[in-house]
Each structure stands twice: as C-alpha cells, then as structure tokens.
Image 1 (spheres, helix red, strand yellow):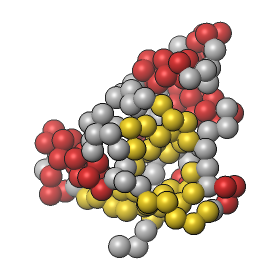
Image 2 (cartoon, rainbow, N blue to C red):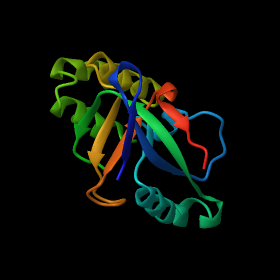
Image 3 (tube, one colour):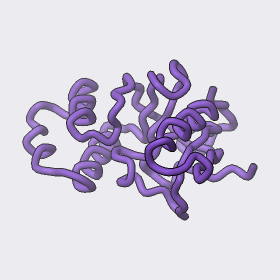
Image 4 (tube, rainbow, N blue to C red):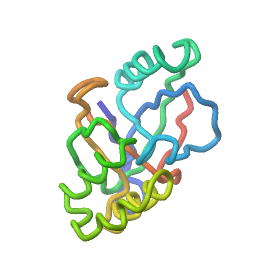
Length: 158
C-alpha cells in the first residue's frame, strides 16, 4: 500500500511508491510508456519485473526503485490494462468525460508522441496531474499510479 507522508506544494501528498525497469536513464520519459510512467506497491513492481522480464530481458537486469510522488489530484479510473494503447486511453478519456465525442476528430489524427502529449494536455486541462487505479494484475486490488510530469517524481534514497 502506498504510504502517505507530509503535504507538499499545491496540496499534493507525498506517496512512497516503486517502479520496475530494465532501462538506465536520468529522467523519466513519459512517451516511452504511453500515457506516462507507472508506479505502485513494492509487490506490484516486483510482479511487473517478473512478468515483463520473462519476455524482454533476463530478470537479473531489472531493478525495483523507490520514488516519492507528489500528486495533488489524480483521476481515479478503472484499470484499462493498456495504458500504452491509444484506443483504450481514448475510450477512457471519453468515459470519464475528459474529452467529448467532438474531440475524436483531433485524437484520431494523432499517433505516438503527438497522441500522448494531446491526452496528457487534456487531463491537465481537466485539472488532473496523474491517474490512480486499482490494479487488476500486479498486486491485484492495490492502487497503482500513472504520472507524466517529472517534477512530481522524486528519487528516494534507499
């Protein structure tokens, strides 16, 4: 379970969460994983490491790292499963009224980084700084988060 800490700027809470990756980087790139970067419980991150590590790289190359997220207003959604799948994210934006049917003309002209930038802008315009959902797969039933702004992610010394 994510641990809530002190308040941060703009009413955000500091959440201690984990991220699993087999990549080396200095900054998160939200375009590498669709809507944004995923964080969850330690168990969710290790579950992800185990599941994806089987297909992409040897499990020994993966690492699970702790971060503090400073999120003020995440949109609570269902776990759509495909946070890197443009049609699924588009349908989620419609379902939660972040976009209207008239916006589909714009969204369907976009793909890749242009689509993800557009989707994040729509969420930000609606006042959201992240996504929170009860995961159906990794540490099922526990909250996981999607964040696209590096300013909301702080490494935690372990």
